Every structure is written in structure tokens, then in C-alpha cells.
Amino acid sequence: MTSEKKKKIATWIIVPLMLFIFLWDIASVVLGNVYTSRVQITPETFDGTYSDRIHFLNTANSDAILLESDGHFALIDSGEGSFNPRRKGKYTGFEQVVIDYIKKVAADGSGNAHLDFILGTHDHYDHIGSFHAILQEKDILVDKAYFKAYNPAVEKKLDKRWGLEDVYEQIMDDLRQRNIPCEHTPPSEPFAFGNFTLQFFNTVTPNELYGEGENAASIGVKVTKGARSAFLAADITRTTGLTKLLEDKVGHVDVLKIGHHGYYGSGSFSWLRKLDPRIAVVTNRLGKIYPNEKWMLIFWARLPIFATVENDGVIVSFDDNGELVLTNHIHGGNA
Image (cartoon, rainbow, N blue to C red):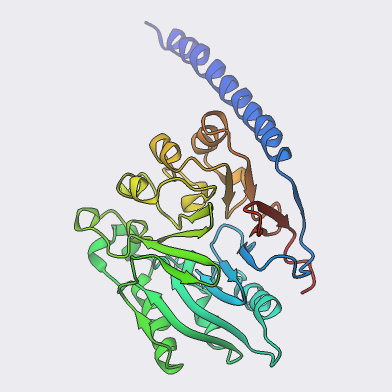
């Protein structure tokens, strides 16, 4: 077979395949818009109507989630800071965005913002990078912290180049300077947080996941009020094997914070079937969700997906009638 004929055959295969993928992706966008249009979401007014809420902040493709329940507040991850060891160029992190939001939403009459706890789900900078700056704010009071002890045995080669231990040690030093106690083995049993019941998952990384990368150390958080619940999946992925280990333990939820920002390996058919959510939130842009993950979420799970970037933050409120209320544009509202 001549090289010219091989090129023609390759063209006949590749061009139709690319066209199919292009049309399939357009179809997923259209269908995704249909699903999201069926769920009402309105601009946040911060009028105090709801007291049990999950605030998903807009920190681009990083996680910063503020829990609020009956006057109690807690911060799960902090968003990416301004000194990520992975980045070579200069950029602006999200420290001030998160700090301003905490002070706006969680401040008391004395001007202090009180957090019952902070949780670092794992040691990647896009999850814990802004904690250093937050812990310098003397008017943000923190009762305790939950951080797994840094474990190099979990890392992959890439993790070793990203300065994870240095970032972790900086935060530990910040906590010591503030006399904030830190639990390195977070509780695995459910506990009360205002009107919520919280449960941490993967509080001890299984030995079988050592070497799978820092994402395998991710702590997931289930938030429950009455019959409704949400699961905050940090960077839990199928590629580490963590979704398989946790799916039966987590059980059904109504809201899923998609793991690993919707990147490759962030979910699986089995994971979505077992959790069976009816709403998904992604801490990213919709366009950055990997195509295969997006197709699975939309075509198979039929989920409306609300992205923190396009919505400029998303709040999921649990009302007293057992319903979920969604609001957005949370950074533009007035407390």
C-alpha cells in the first residue's frame, strides 16, 4: 500500500471521527443547558432567608467552600494562593477573594469572623494555597483545623516536584503561631454542625493507594440535613481508585461537588449510579470539564451542572421544608 493511499484512509477515518466528536460535544452542551434550565437558580441577595447553606466560591479551577449552619461557619479548602510552586510565571491568587467573602458572610457584631474549623482536604496548592494568608487575618478566628499529616508515600513523581511538603509545613507553622489545634486524623464518625450532620470520608489513606498521588489522600465531606444531602468530593477520582472504595460508604446524595474539577478520571458510571445525585456543582469553567466526563454526566447521569466560574459562585441552601434552593453571583451581593 502506497503512502498516499494510507494518508487517504487515515483521512477517511479521522475526519468523520472528529466531526462526530464535535457534533456530540455540541449536543452535550445543548442538552446540558436544557437540564440546568429545569432547576431554578437566582442571584444571591444575602437577605438572611436561609441559615443552612453551602457556599461554593468562585476561585477559578480551585476549591474554596464555606459551610454555614445556624450561625456556625467552617471553611473546606481555601482556593489557590499566589505562590503555587507549580507555576513559573507571575499571577494573582484568590487569597483576598476568600478573605473578603468570609468577612462579609461570617462576621459577627464585633467585626470578627468565626470559623468552627478549617479543613484541608489534601495538600495540593489549588486546595490549600490560600490558608497561609487566611491565617494571618487576626479577625478571622478559627477554633480548630483538620489536616492529614503529610505522607510522602502517597505521592507520585509529579507531586514531589510541586513542593507539597513545604506548603503543608507553612500552614502547620501558621497554626502553631495562632495556637490553633490541628487534628491529623480527622473524625470518621458523623458529627453535628449547627443543623447539619457532617461526615468525613477517607480520613486515613489506605495503604493500597500509596503511590497513587496526593489526590488519593483527598477527604470527602457529606453534608446532611433531614432527607437532603450533598457530597463534597475534593479531588476524589476513579483514576486513584478512591471512588470505588468510597461509593458504597457515601451512598445517595442530592448534590455532588464533582471531584477534581471535572478533569480526566473525576468520576465513573458506578460512582454516579451509587451516589445518584440530581444536581452537580463543578469548581471550574464548564468548558474545562474533560469531554468524556461531561458526556457521562450529561448523557448518562442526566445531571444539571452548575459551574462556579460562569455563575460567579453558587450557594446551595437547605430550607426548612426539605427543599434545596440555588443562588449564584455570590461575589457581587451585599451581606
